Image (cartoon, rainbow, N blue to C red; front, side, top):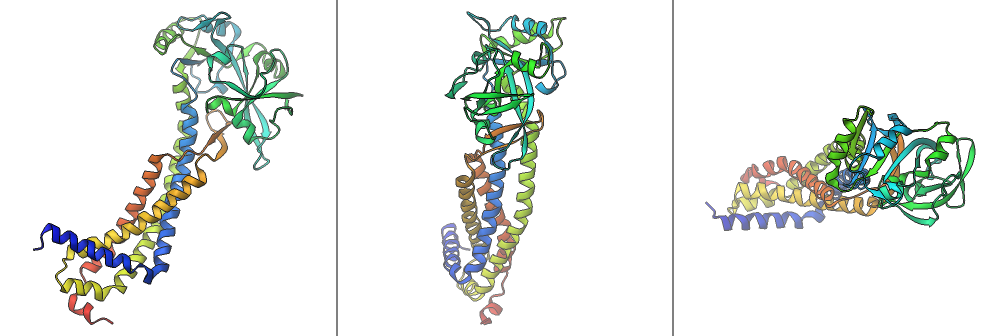
Length: 399
């Protein structure tokens, strides 16, 4: 029986001979490479869409920020408060204060139609009415171009993501809000968060434009510290004057992302699985061709004392090498082609567009390359078994 060192040298020698014979069957090897690269590229690209959407949601709420909705509501679209309720919320214990009063912003969330730049089709874009404290509640808001809107006027500022994705949102242009034209006076960033998909204006002015009276849909608050959340929540949920749902903003946005990320992830794995079947057959074809063209070589090695296991492992290693090279190529294509690519999609829990960038993470790249290795392993298994079982005498007689 060959020792471990001798066995590894046999595997290395047999694998080397196999890889050196690749130019003789270049067509089938390239077909397998392209198939595996396609599987990995599609999987990573689709999952990077979910990762980008999830990243936007994850960066949209700091630990010391909370959102208050009506009890039973799962989004702002189905929530509602009157002015007296929002004042009770703003005065609750745990809310941070400035010289101008509590850091709480009662907000109105309205959907309007705008054209997408890329497709020139209608899209639901959120316009948010805010109160002055909104700029301190969300302390990452920065005006990049233009100026803030003036309180009491029909003016809007636009998130940088929305400005990139939707038409007529440049500074100096106007959009139709209700029945009048409102000028765009500024573009703002929000640290990559959800607010960059929105249009902002004065809540009181927006109420009048849409005949909403003195109603709001949510209250955003800045707390004195992250630890103050439980005190704030308990005070509101036990107040008999209120029927509210209190969440950290980070938890709210994480919950908002679940439906879309689950849908995208499921779709990505479904498409990749179907493509992987084809890639496995490509790998099978490649390795069966390799075994058939090397029949005499394999038989000669067997006659010289190379073990069955060494031949089997070497064929599988060759298959995995081809698949891993294809997987690395597909992962590279996905990274350079999609990482940072900006787009917008529907958030099915708020029925509004969310702008975000595809995010190709190291974890996704590793997952794609692992899938390519699995394809190579499965695709090389049966050809490897056939090579290991070749009758030596019969194989040596083949021309």
